Image (cartoon, rainbow, N blue to C red; front, side, top):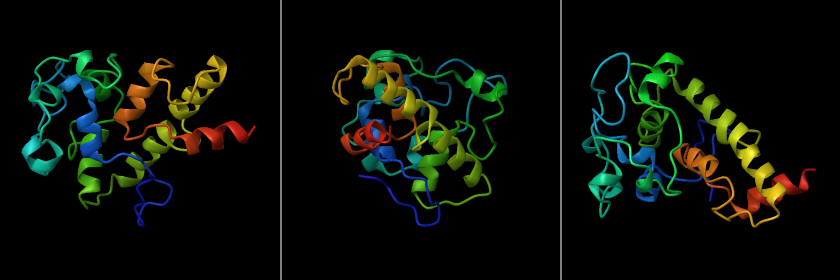
Length: 182
């Protein structure tokens, strides 16, 4: 299933924010204002899970989204993936409107918010998880080299976790498309 946003052609994540949260992302600390390692711009990050629908968090243990410390075991693939808040800030990826980054932007975009930052964030998604995206293509290359099934979680779990943070999981259709394109 691809999510289609008519006003954002080519932006086709295949997971909703709720699906990402329930699967296990960002070591469980994403929605804690002091979660993870501190950033360089401040001790706390302006984020509150209550901004989003209660249904996104229903039956999800708080340790999956409100932990103070990053815990890889709460991630779907049980591995650490990604950089911390300070690294994101140093890279210039953060904007005041979404100080926690891409996933916060995505949650708000999914809810219907549109902003001047949309084109940049959509381009970042395409570069990571889109058809020609770096991580999506690296995952397919690793699977191809391993000779294992496209959905074997033992192949490149860190890359799979990274893609999950970007609201994407490799599907059989996408795998076949990659494999047959030569």
